Length: 257
Image 1 (tube, rainbow, N blue to C red):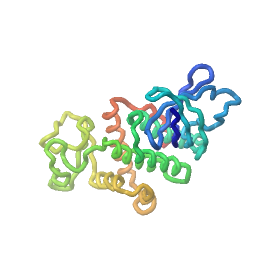
Image 2: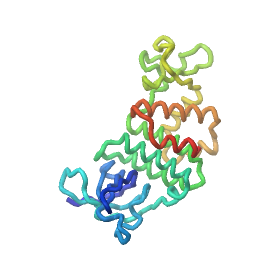
Image 3: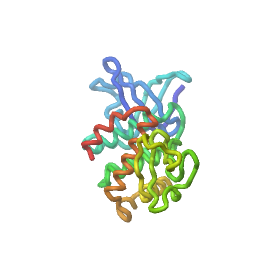
Image 4: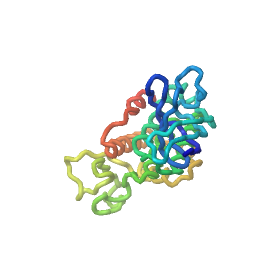
């Protein structure tokens, strides 16, 4: 069976002497793996079309339900070469790719994730704030996958965020519970992150933005260092809880920021 679609490369793995196992995130079937035979040979017909982050029109061939179909064709639509030539862009691109690889199931269409991935990789090639683009991607991706943290009310009793304190409401985010807890429902010995109302409001604002209107973060409403720090820590803690481990790309981001 021959299958044609668009795909963006999120991971590659050398196999044997000349082959490459490639993981694409595709328009029609979500995360898909394929094997490109002989692609590491000098005169390979694939050329540079199987480099990380490359967006191509691809053809896969194999029996129905085969676990590793052959990549028979790959025609570049957008190479995203700049992401591989700049260390900071490479680090953020690796983070995005690893997150998709770890969380998305195979062979499940998700056009929202495909559009988000394509948009953010393209935006990263411009003079945009890479850190803000990464924050934007993480929040939107978690929302699309159904893993967003609950920040507007207590996870246990559903008390709303604004009722958590008689003075200025400060939410306590508990990673092990995937959201905030009120004073009655939380335990002092459990680790938590304090979240200001501004950070909580911005998180939900990012979730509701049209995909192509996120530049307001950089122009109209630039993020303060405090809000940036809270969002980054929130996302990192929540991802560690969801995955049960630390992403390998996190260490690269430490020096890229």
